[in-house]
Length: 192
Image (cartoon, rainbow, N blue to C red; front, side, top):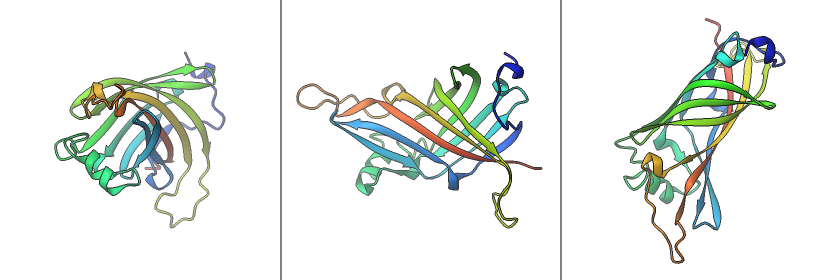
């Protein structure tokens, strides 16, 4: 495909830095197969390079796994432990895109996710939320044009060696294998 086939209103090609103050990295996992627990990571960084052809764009991101927050300090410590994320041994999760494909009204973002010492291919559904001008104060440390993106997907925690397949009475998993991922990203255009 060429850029003429993919039209994005107000599209700007360039290199963008993820603004952590206006972005979120969240997840949802089923607990005891009867409820959902939501969490987020508070420390992350990344770069989005929007190509002249949107389908030639790239993304890299790093998440500090110790920054997990599920709303319960005791649970967070358990998830940080060797029982799950083992943040002492594996402090970061990284993502590197390998391609972008048009899909309906949105896009698919293919990439490699590295977690817990394992790297696997992952595809995220990507929505380009828009591009906007620099409307911030000159003393704003994140001043510059903005771009917004939402990416969602699902991974298997067991494929990455996170946790185990322990079951509860009745044979159901105590914690689901599937983890839903939601990324709400606002990025700032680099001007250098």
